[in-house]
Length: 409
Image (cartoon, rainbow, N blue to C red; front, side):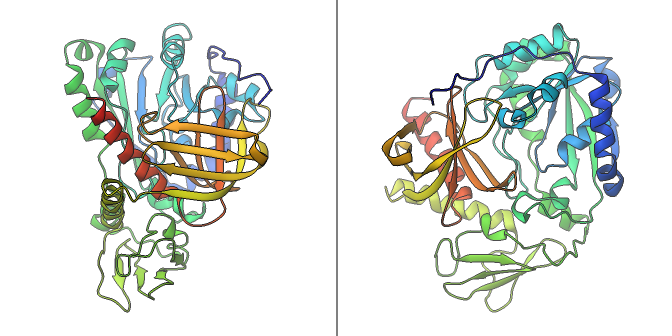
């Protein structure tokens, strides 16, 4: 904690050479997925620079972006941990680092610098977090204010098949799925100027509304890999039959509750089938949505509480992720409390601090994490027990809504 905080730097003009190297490194991946891009209304966007929005579903997303944007320089708004151990390379690629779900007053000026000084497009994943269940995650309100302020054409890239190929819950095991994307111009600068913020936000909400399990079923995309249900318990952590939490186990093609024995099979089209029970849910996003409703009921009844042991890492600079010891992560109606390192660490974060929380699975192949903190310091908590990551994110989002409502928001 005594180390100096991260030094802010303006984004550099993207190196064409490094961008070419990045595309070369991603070439094998893109050949495997047989990437195709469908362009819509792109003549309206002109030569750029553009403000590019992209949905966030898998680690394949950035490879797709480097391919479809190969004819133009662009900077990527990325999570600050992406710079650890490779800051020089990432800076020269034009990266704009920021902290997930942490207010960053420099981000707008950095994007403006990239667009207007470096003459580079800016790629942003406004969802910030990956989709856990294959549906769109919440994007910040009043994104229209940002887009109107930047005054550049707004381009949207939407992927199809990226989630099915490499869903976050599945331990980075890739499936044989073709990937396509669409790239379309949503707004010209003139259209931004003449469109109300509320109307811009409505367009964005529509663009970021999707259901990739339904897409898989509608398009009869068969995923035959025998590991397709591995880790499914990370999102379907609560059994709808006995209501036990943390007892489900996703392995192979099955999801089983070790408390009551209820067993489901995930078929090749992404649909759940009851093996020894009448299925409560056949659609994974429906089960996940039910878990959110269960959390809302817990919160309303003042019964929601998280208290788990965890290993703790600190991100203070770009040199390393510092593993500092162990402690306990608590979460309730007032927000997060993290204690650890033999009493040397104590951090509190209010329920109204952010509309969501950074939750990830198999993060950098270390483990599942919940990350909280500020621009000065980020705390990465690796839970030692239970599948608490998805529930924590859902609870944080619901508690934020309540906090905002109480503030009259």
